[in-house]
Image 1 (tube, rainbow over the protein chains, first blue to last red):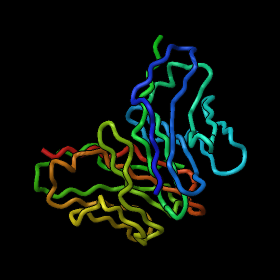
Image 2: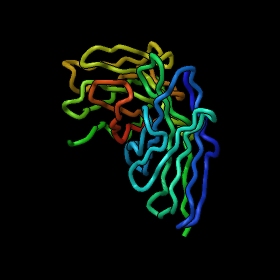
Image 3: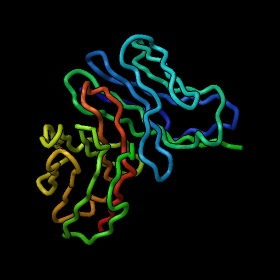
Image 4: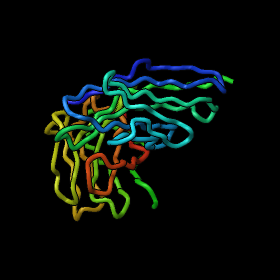
Length: 113
Length: 115
């Protein structure tokens, strides 16, 4: 079985500050991990994904995430928050014989001026 | 790439009525997924199609729910005898075959409110 846990349903940061959104996964086999972002009134968009290879993955809009097997984590970071980063962020996993993504419950990011 | 489109954007219905939603995936995508999202939760998988074949259904998909994808193009999701617990955002996504770790392209969803 596969699952993800996102710690913190709401995160607030000041513009220019570090963004850190936490995601831990559970999987009995090597997982594929994703971060999707959902802006108001828009569909979810892929930010980045980890399949194999380099554990530090760079995505769009300056975001990156690091796969840490020992910690079963895939936290999302951005060095400097921008007002346009305000959105809901979802971590997702697919592994083994599964044919669909399992999403976390999401983290709403607010960027304060 | 015109994106995934869903219709309608909003649907308000009375309990017990039937509703049908439509999803038009990106034209060359052979996989199509339906997810359901409630407030404060992430999307939950409902069902998926490979071309016109419905290959997997979640236990969340009760007998009142039925989905089709005739000719492997657009898809419809019908809910019969709606209940208040069906109120949610229904999301459609598509992908271009290959591995199951491929990027999903999501539509903006259909927001269903059952009164």
